[in-house]
Amino acid sequence: MFFVNKSIIKKMKDNQPVDEELPIEKPPFFKSWKGMYWLVLGNLAFMIVLFYIITKLYE
Amino acid sequence: MRPLDWIVLLGTIGFIVIYGIWKTRGSKDIEGYLKGDNSMKWWTIGLSIMATQASAITFLSTPGQAYEDGMRFIQFYFGLPIAMVIISVTIIPIFYRLKVYTAYEFLENRFDLKTRSLAAMLFLVQRGLAAGITIYAPAIILSTMLGWSLTITNLIIGVVVIIYTMSGGTKAVSVTQKQQMAVMMGGMIVAGFMVVSYLPDNVGFGDAVAVAGKLGKMNIVDFSWDWETSWDDRYNFWSGITGGLFLALSYFGTDQSQVARYLGGKSIGESRLGLLFNGLLKIPMQFLILFIGVMVFVFYQFNQPPVFFNEAAKNKVYATAHADELRTLETEYSSIFEQKQAAVHDLVAAIKTENEPAIAVAQTKVENYTTAGKEVREQVKTVIKTATPDAEVKDTDYVFISFVMKYLPTGLVGLLLAVIFSAAMSSTASELNALASTTVVDIYKRSVNSKGSPTHYLNASRLFTLGWGLLAILFATYASLLDNLIQAVNIIGSIFYGTILGIFLVAFYFKRIKGNAVFFAAILAELVVLYCFYFTDIAFLWFNVIGCVAVILFGFILQGLIGNKEIEKV
View 1: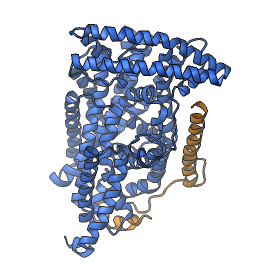
View 2 (view 1 turned 135 degrees about the vertical axis):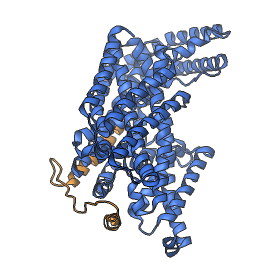
View 3 (view 1 turned 90 degrees about the horizontal axis):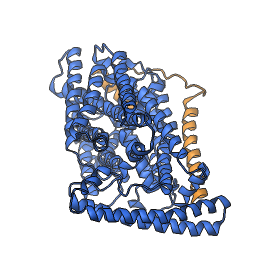
View 4 (view 1 turned 90 degrees about the vertical axis):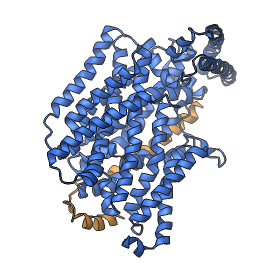
């Protein structure tokens, strides 16, 4: 997915400092970032369903 | 405004500005000035991102939009949480690892200098225009309501922002935005409680929502799609989830005023959490603001609204030969409202007893009176336009502030004006900061003077902040009230964002497309978007999709036509 990580980093090394192995810390409450992403997307789905119910209820 | 309002307004704004300057005093290098020394935690980043997007336009226009058009504008934000996730997964790690100051730096390394400069210039043009509107929006309202000179009001707002943004750079912007967000949300929640408390004693909160629903204002989600007409519909689920996604991807992923917010984070994780925080809370926040607009609408079902919300524009007509015409229309409007009252109370009574036939009858009556009232309002607008040809007859941006000034108690008026000032300052500060950093990093340092010292670039950043600030004030002074302020900003953004996003998506995902192909593809795509804007009725949210897809398509075609080897030689 991220070919840029390799090819661009390689190219940029000549111009400026590049941190190839920058660590990504774990998110709070979840074992991985996937959990956080699903929380945000699940919240969106929940709101859409809730809004749809409100729309139908009050139309 | 009474003395207490002045104390609340000046005290709130003064405290935020002084705190921001004091807290970020002593920025000595460009790293600290443009990236805040990478010291910001996720909640600062999240609030800063939200405050940057929530301009004064949000608080002036959005309730007015809900008053006129109901809740459906919320669908505009449905693509935003998805965009937050995509940016967190893809863009943040790349920007961090490359240690860039601006989003456009990355493009030179992926493509070439001219593509980086093109993207930076597109950003500077659209954001420069938007910065002017961001200052103009509260200035026009305040100057109208308080009788101040528009130029002086523009100057006051612009100069205050320039002072603390020049002084502390990115860190000052983010630090002050925390306080500004607190003021904004606190003020709006209080306003929401007040408007509900002003409803008649026999109308509870549930009744108010039911009345709003029966009168078509609780139209939050619309899944319907018609291939003939839905393309022109600005706000439905499909345009929100696709066009809104593309707009949010462009805005948060490639607009330096937002990129700078999360590039100042302490780590990749802090920046991701800041963006996801926005993804979780943005829609509820917009829902609250729109809902307050709907409650103001319900309030005006029981209390007579002005025939025209911009009282100052209306008052000018009284000094002309059209005064009697206007007075006659006002009398007619009052008469319609009095007749409507009985029907509104019948509707509430029918809702309380859940009597469906009675609800239908009362609903039809209220709608008929509302239509009659709207017709009178249209005639009033014609009279105003005839009597004072320079007057702006679209008054939705005045709905909320007119309510605040007329009905809220002393002290709260000052607080709500502080909300509007805070919002204007927070988004303008981010814009000036981003305009300055892009000008210095992508244009000045890269193409004009690459051998300056860190202090030289720090001073240059401060000077460009000043320059862009003065330009924004100048633009604000000469801007006229556009169709609708929040839409004007979004339309300007949509004209350019699709193309910029297209360049970045090609950079991230289409390895075969090289610099020359994407550069000319971007120019062609921008021409296509401008054609759509001037010569078609396509809703503006689709410009984001059109521009983005056009860059990718033209990129492939041009790359195929010219050939990889030839392009690489060029």
